[in-house]
Image 1: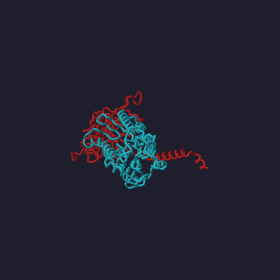
Image 2: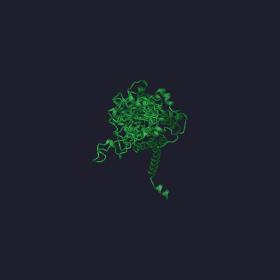
Image 3: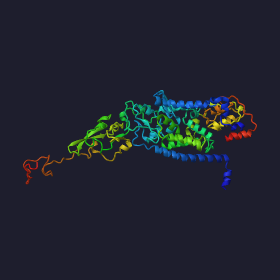
Image 4: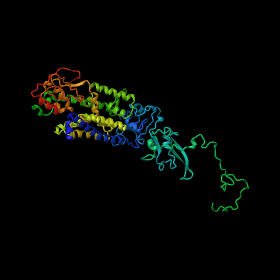
Length: 279
Length: 306
């Protein structure tokens, strides 16, 4: 029955259909393998920071033709093309390792100018607007400043000193009477150039690292309202809450820092004075 | 077939024309391939930055942008709208190859050509079976597949595996383990499939072949009447199906090799001791008598087998 059908079909047509089916099936198999490899190539390591102006990774792999012109025009040899099986980033795409050579944030941004396809966005004209990544003080146990010493190197080398990195003073619980000058990165200013990571004085890994934005930032919780950032009061009509005054009728028995009206309160029992024996 | 078929390939050509003339276009092609590679290497090796970049995209003398049109096409179907520089560069490259000859890229520029030619040479010397020979259209299926995968993944798909850019970029920017792709192509061509990569699989060659469908530079079998059936041209040609229509044509046929598969490598010109072939342009309609054929049917059979 099927033999009749096949013999009824024009042999040329039959052969064409067979060849087309073979070719399509073969390409489907090979194509699935290729798709898997392309998806695999998207796994950009945390250490690999894209050049300034780089499109988001999903768009970057559609736009970067891996010509290396950004690498050639980088005056500090910061950028390199990823080598297969060595660097982890998609083969032949540009990146830099901030601990190795950071971005020097050239004013004329030659890498962006060199890019022929727009994988590095020509809209970036002020290098301070670049967001290559975000510096994060990732190891607060070994950072010298976090330990209460005055290293300050990451803060000093930051091209946007006192804007992208500030030193926030806080009490040093370890000694009880010193301060800790905590290097603090501000995401609205940090370009991710990596000069802080490069210059961290710790041997081996840096305590402060540039991470890709996708790793470094969480999405803000939109449904929480930050009262101190809002001009309108939380509740209409109420612009302030009543302050509690220390003093009689409250629980500050010894009234430290509070006021104590004369004669109003006299403890009946007084601690015995030791007469200097224990002093 | 004639008695001469049994002789080693190129034997008569070397005897009659000398070693150099029997390899003239081969030597010129190697020089051309080395020239294009060295242009890119002048910068990183000697600090002479005439040409920056690689075959995927480059900038020459800081004014001439060139972009591989196939890579840019993949980027476009992947959803990227390229800048004018890349579009201009791709247009220049596409126009040049469409005019001269699409697959001139394959035989005169592509760095993988030396690898697959070496594999083909070793294949001939070791007298290995031709192995898996997929249909000639396979490369167009692969070309379509690459564009589909680029569209679906939103990424330039072929650059993940392309041995051409792996090798070329590797030599210029640092190779990593990309050399494994080059070795794979060599071994594939040597043991799995004779002339398998460039003549059956490579979608880049397929793309440039389509570009050069109407290109000018053509090989003509003008003196086909002198052919003595030594079969050496079929032995050296990477796309041997292109020879038959020209060489075995009848008196009235124009003896041009018009197939877009022809890479214009010129090996047939080299290896022919009676100088049947020569380079010309596609509008060359010099009449060429066909061969005097004793047994046309037998000849037809040879053509098909080739």
